[in-house]
Length: 131
Image (tube, rainbow, N blue to C red; front, side, top):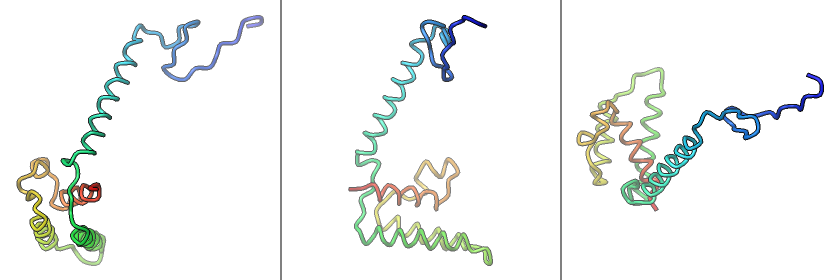
């Protein structure tokens, strides 16, 4: 209407003390979410820096693991023939055992329905995180 002061444009959830947009009495809710996110990020950062999240491997072993992973991906991607998962899994188990990592059968990933390849991939990422 004429003579009325224009209202400012707000993003969803943004509060304005003059107009009360988004003000539902939950000022502390946003702070709680930020605090929870900060705590989670700090825990994640600490875990990344700890040895528990990294799997130290010798450079030659890491190369062999990378090659085995690429070989498995090529076999799985070949649409002309079915991948021999028994052979692939046996090779991955052998590499995991040589590195001294816990066998797949002793992991939570098996209980959660992950595959040997999923487990190996996770270990490979952890090995790449190692200093």
